[in-house]
Image (cartoon, rainbow, N blue to C red; front, side, top):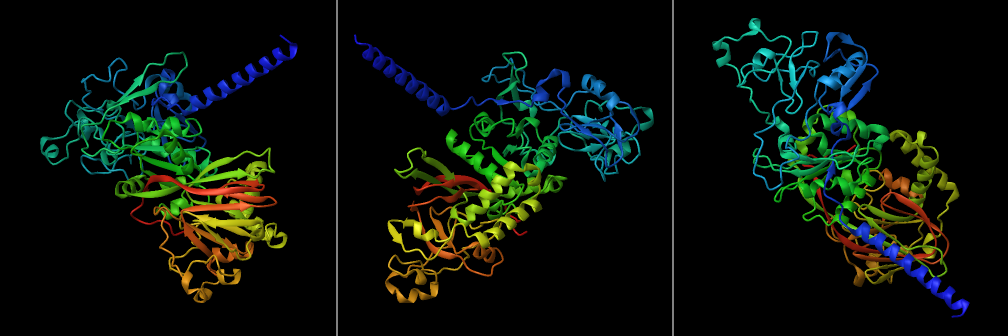
Length: 600
């Protein structure tokens, strides 16, 4: 055969091999991941005895070593899981001799079909360093006020008890330093005191906790491989069990995400509190496949709108049915979706000093539906090297001046991460970039470069520097630009002056269609325009209305020339000539807070 024929055959084989590799890679990503969820790293390491230590440079209140007792410590370490405090000199002793609260109690040798059941989880008593104003759950007297290491606290149900009161429990009391004849209780006193349950009932958090006696770990197959959660059973009590899975990125909110993780590890099973910087959402959501049929796990996502969108996309990709309802503990800036669902504009770890209020809100929250939209970006034929994009939108999608501010801030955050760590500083960055554009006007005459087709109708645009597609009522960190009143839509036959002024709609009685009330679950979005950066500022303080362009369920935007800043749910980029298409993708299950915290 000629030499060129061998070269052609070689090239064809190389192309075929490349195609097969790409196909296999896509097939691998489409495969559903193993539902097994990694157990906490420190809990899987026998050398740590289950503890996850956090170094404390200076205790903010008197703390006593849980191993040696003695005088109050100035510095030391505290276990994030059980709350045990130790001095630096006794840390190795605590790791070796004092076990932490267990993640799982079902033996790994038990088969999933086995009917063998562990009776329950015993209390995990930690001595001393009780919260301020603690009260004995048996005698109702004050606990932990002796100015030394004294009294007990259960790391599961958070009950506090005196050692002598704990002796009323069936099968005796936990071993303590101060048990003995001097603390015996008379039968008369005992008859007036409350009985302490022998097995832990997990107290007021029972419907949210995954009890360790219902969890099984699999044995690691390789050395230094973490154990995996292989099975979860439903507890006999409570009758209504809705386990709460907490997902947070420890880097969110300028590091506040790490403190939030610590708060929840202390009151829940550490295995149900996952750090998204270590465990990606697709793996973390394996919990939804581990829980028994008929049990719906609830998700609490601690972070900003970007983290929430990341988790919602993972739920869609995994095809979880029914989708687990999702609540938000907002961190950082923005948080428009959190505001709309009543979870507030932003929180801090200090708001979780007691998780009672949040868990109460979760118990009373109602399930709502959130539209999800597919935003497709198809570059024009002249942009041969550009790639198509497909993104999912939950909040809003914008072109022009709004996205320009987000793009500039994103560039600053990447180049100067140390200067974008706090909520107040971030707001100053946004203000600075918005003010700069008042003079630069980088997006002027945007309307001349766009063709907008809404539900098959071509719109005549007024003079614009920005275009925003709204799925939710909140935009730009709490601004509600659309309002609540109904007003006429814009006719495709109207002039730009008439379109920007709803009062002029009397000139087109045939086209006088009124807007429906805005909703994030009606399968429709709102389209509005922005005159300039100054118009954005006016919207933020309520001095000007938005330019209402219409409502619909299908949108096509053609960018005919030049480049324009674009953002989808806070992800900005610079886009050349292309066609944007917005179409309904589906709905997500979200939890709406019964007590609206959105003001602020």
